[in-house]
Length: 195
Image (cartoon, rainbow, N blue to C red; front, top):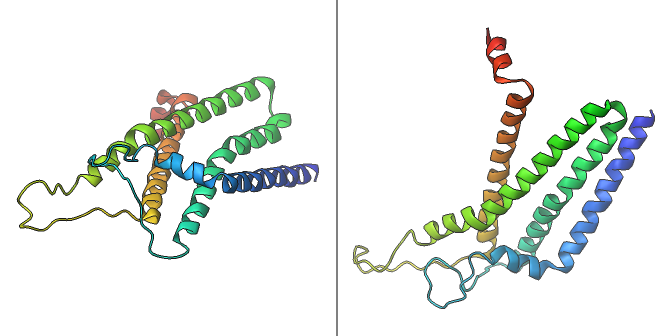
């Protein structure tokens, strides 16, 4: 029964931390929003593939975008604390060598996920964004006189960014599960298990 009380207490800590992060993100919502746009903003007028303005067509659209952004960033920031709380909860039931192995594996997972999230956000996402924004090149004469203009809605950009980061994190999770299976079970054991 003691473990259930401790688990509830740790879930309260995580809930409090998430609420605190949400309020902090709300206070700095404009800075966070601009930092998510930094890789695609147009600092030189007329550059191709970058953005120099957004539109929104519904009164609550900007507020909805801020709520999505606050939740997304809060979830990303609470994840290491959540992992630490799980590890701290499991610590009394593990042997010393098991605890050290689990701790080193979780540290590797957090570093790997953080590094690849930064790589995805600062390198892969701007490349994909540039390709999509240059998809219709209006400089050629093959459009029969029709010009298409890319007017970006703020909610569509954030939806695209969050979907991209969500899929990237699912891919990272699959890679880490595969690494865990191959590292701890071994390839030879997996081959023998099939027989």
